[in-house]
Image 1: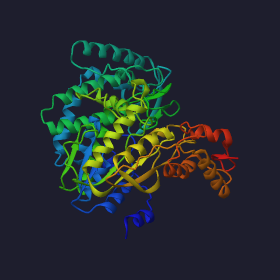
Image 2: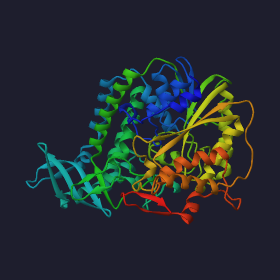
Image 3: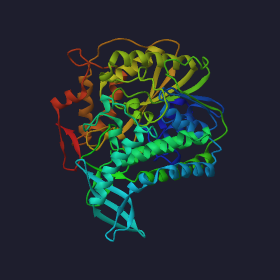
Image 4: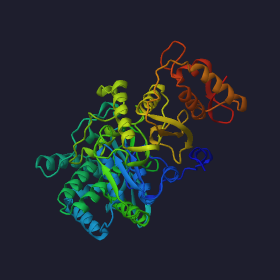
Length: 527
């Protein structure tokens, strides 16, 4: 069966991430079975697969499971830590627990006491969760013999809040602890917070600082790195970025949007409980991946994909990647939530992204992608294939990415649309008008450039596509529209409007069509 027929016949139902992919949060993860399906089509055991924009490492991990040699390249040191820790073998879990407990036990008693409240009899009870409203602690939840109890924050609790602030200052001035003073980068700033430390309550900031200080004292490098991953994976869970419910004193789990956002009503989870939970999840995830991973060689390279000089020319059998989505996700700025706690040197200058606040605009994004795909072309064997996932509502980013691929010497042979297994972080809280899947574009390596600069009007393609969709349906959702539209625009390289300017799809359809709540309860476009 030919490659083209295999791709045409390919039907993928995305699966949710198993435990070993949940060791740490990261953005833009693709369904692991999507990656493995593509690897199986284009390679055989022993072949080499590379992902030049590795992220959380799905390609390297799946390649390893399938006895392929995986190479992952990423300039973000956080990505490298996540992938190395996921595939690292022979973790001594008993030693890990021992060092973890030593760190917890080393936290001063007066700091630990801040995590308690008093019940109606005056007995101390460990706080499970608390809710803050408009900067004030208002409600607390604790458990006694498994029974949940809710209470309003009282004088004892408010005194602890004040004591936490004083202790934080005291231990910091003594040089016992340190915590990030870094400013939040403009692109991810929201809700008026200007520094990383403002994303935590003083109580949880204290515990985080003591825990990180304890990690630095661990002599075993292997254990120290595992504890580092456990620590950073727990940080979002006991940050102030989780919306809270004052009535139930609960909070949504996880990081709701890809910004640094502290809701006006937010949760304060018990930091030590969060760390213990992440220890358990780490061990369970590691045990799972150890049953699946192999001894096959893999490489994790912390550098920019603009320079792959340490990889031999024509040594790679297949490329599967997920290039930066223009302005969709600011990976480095978001990762600063973790890296500012660590002794990492982060090369923000060479990040491939569109971020006007750092003067990284279309030209910089384009030049860097040109270099990256040129390097990918160099290391890929002749006649072999590259697949990548991508979505963005802005044509300018599609044009930049596709142009870079064509300039490098690739030919488009197939486009597939794959739905998401779970909603992505970029969709945020309002998901009505967002894309709910990814395109998978597959290219074949040629030894000539197919790039041609021409101005083709894409407005007619939009009208034709919407007309076709509305013949079958009374309306069309944004996601379904883009799913049908983008491949047609890319195929004809119709990136421009009738005035010769870059096409703005949203602006054009807003003029001609109406977006509203339909009878079926969903939002969509109609005439």
